[in-house]
Length: 228
Image 1 (spheres, one colour):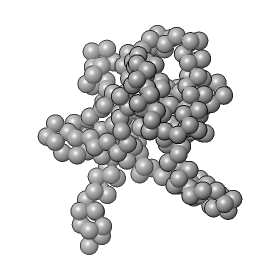
Image 2 (cartoon, rainbow, N blue to C red):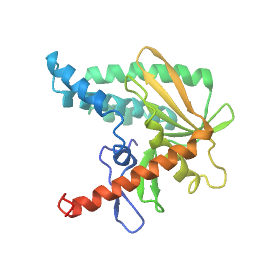
Image 3 (cartoon, rainbow, N blue to C red):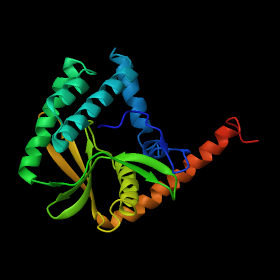
Image 4 (cartoon, one colour):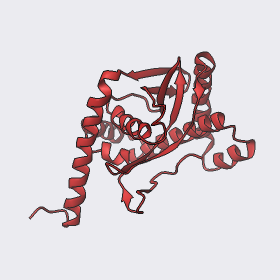
């Protein structure tokens, strides 16, 4: 089942770990764009930007659920129970996007391995949930579903973290080789974005640097938020 929002990840000793998403937030590449978007919402008398964000997040979660239900053969009752948490507009939006996923799936014919894998990295201390290990055109791939209007390069920091941890735990004997984002939106063709293999290690180095910033932030917070 789809992991709930704000999942607490823990290491083998039960200690809470920062999520990959939280760590990635230290990057801040989209800060300026987010500020401009919030100002745009206010000037155009659009609803609260946080409500817009939360609605978009719910739609994305529902799209992820429909895909997982398809891959894992959920029954009608399971799907209807999950849909009860959403309104009709959100369901309509998500189903249209899911139709585009199915069109891509039927054309590409990927080989499903697993879905929604919880990842815990004991070595570096982080957790998260990876979308979809899959074989696409003979490439053992970690695929991730993105449902927003745009795709950003920073998303690959998240994926390389999952990729590296999965390959030293779950798939250490038969590792994944590639990373791909599948962009899924209603009424537009699903589009693949592949991370070149030669950029996997540089992106992971960047992620580990972000993890150091997260650790520093935790240390500062323990001191009351001030460095004295």
